[in-house]
Length: 308
Image (cartoon, rainbow, N blue to C red; front, side, top):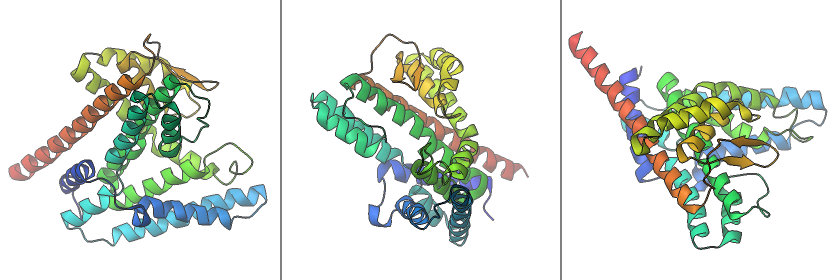
């Protein structure tokens, strides 16, 4: 059975591989396969609302049993564990997607920036967004996905190994695909949305804290990041998304606005392409902080073993 120390070591390898190599091709990427599972569940779901509610929960539970069992059957060799975990992290692909939006804005190509934002990062309509709104949406997505695609799966691995990490990614994928308040998904995605909310309670708050620490180390703005978090984290419909986004807004001394939905932060500086670069720098520092914590955990475990 894997120990906390060995999991920390495996996760360090996975984080490094994700940052250096990135994702495998889409046709056999595990998260893409999870998405296909959820799409199949939607295609065969019943029509009646209450039946869709039960079906959505049962399909998600069945998928969790499948991916959890499959992950548990993998050998415990560090390279195999780290290699599998790498495919369930998404720092490099996230940074690349945000960088593409940044570059399009720097090129003054607003239509391309809107297209890239919609293609990679958000589900909202982007055709009417201004350059500042595109930049804000990219920064918001970067902050939220630091939690959903990096901190949360990493925590899941530390707590329950690869099975927990795989189940988390399934639930997060299910929420991304089904977690909408509309006629099509209101009942089908209810279990997925509630489960994803619960699973992300701790990761979202930890991500906000790490962003604040990173802001302090980078620009001396940790207090500003945490102040914005305390004041604005609850201003989103999601109980979790506001935490990393508000921390990012405070760190960047800006205000992140999604018209009709939320206003996070109270900084005077309008989001723009250079601010996306600053947000990416902050995300890198946050990633490095996570790695440093894992190194510390690995070192402490080694010391305890030596003493005992």
